[in-house]
Image (cartoon, rainbow, N blue to C red):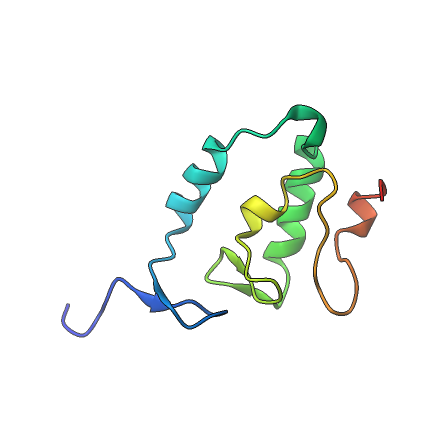
Length: 96
């Protein structure tokens, strides 16, 4: 199809990136994190669900407020949501 490109500007920095959610998910799955530093799987899934319902989610992968890929940001046990109105993950993350 003419006129369609495989790159789009990053919603945070306006750089041209190809934001393929499947590729990002595969990369996130490959990253190893010390189990004692990782959120348990239930907390991780709840965080991702919160992000998926957030108005700040861009391209199904990025947080507008911090520019992070949500699949990476949600993994650490001490992770937090950067939403300016408060941490939307807090109910799932009481370990601060």
